[in-house]
Amino acid sequence: MAEEIGIEILTEEQYAGLQKLGKFDLKTSSWLRTPDAVRALGGALFGDRRYDRVFTFHNGAESYYAARGFRGILKV
Image 1 (cartoon, rainbow, N blue to C red):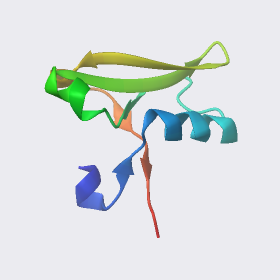
Image 2 (image 1 turned 60 degrees about the horizontal axis):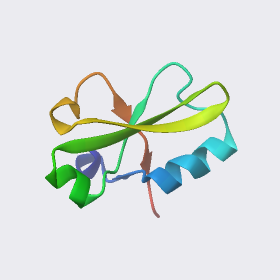
Image 3 (image 1 turned 180 degrees about the horizontal axis):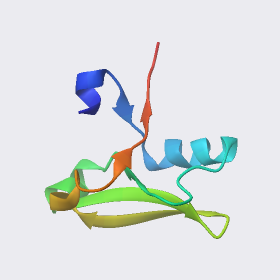
Image 4 (image 1 turned 90 degrees about the vertical axis):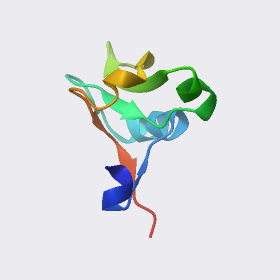
């Protein structure tokens, strides 16, 4: 979906940088770009902010499109 709308899903590092600009994902979480090695093993990463900290978690890639959105970057 991200490719369809012309954006890239944020990496863990970009997501941490975004969280320095404001407080995002206080009640939800967002899928993050997952390294190929992790995806090859069936995993996917997501992040959120809780307790005034930014967390990165993992889940099975089969859940990748379920119940979470993603944060993206548009380069112009």
